Length: 257
Image 1 (tube, rainbow, N blue to C red):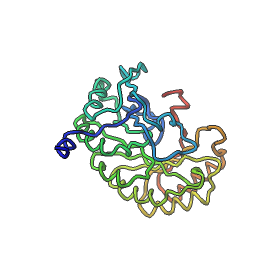
Image 2: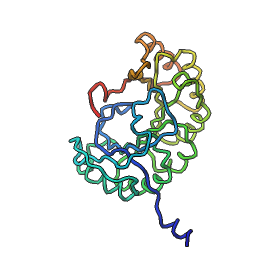
Image 3: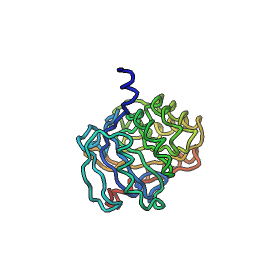
Image 4: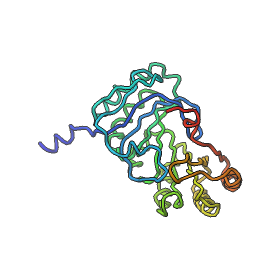
């Protein structure tokens, strides 16, 4: 009986918010996305700008009408079907969207939930983008078949108080590269050229991926490098990868959500 109950009960997830907005990071800056922001994260990046989503919250904030920023609370945790029901009203004008965008927190902490939700979401006929810190390769394996685009953050040790996630990143990338992948580096004033070069050369062994150098948005004592250093970093990266863009968080420049 207990086993039967386990089969019937579907996984649920804590979700922070669901809304329609403009993409502010990566290759698809300026595109319209349907954002689904999951709660909880397995890291605690010092420069994180979504610390509000690190912990589970009692209710998910759901936009009533796409782009109007009028939200209502929906009790957490959500079932896959409940989430599908919540996003449906925001998809009336489906043609304006680039993709369904999974972000966090860290969405892969909810891989069991996503393994149920994503096959159903495929029927919406929109690409599915996963934004991830790239440290959970086993969780990615569970859902990779339903993902179209992966925006993977690479955590440089100098930005993570010396913590090194290079092995997890490389394993993650080996799984990711069967899909469209971009790799984003948050660049602080602490990042040196030699560190970046070593990481890029290591990653180049796995393929030629679009690289995003994202100057950190200043937070507390953390600041971005000056422009001359960013230019040197781009020049260095362009000697290793074909596509290298320097892009800040454009939604913050615009004052968007």
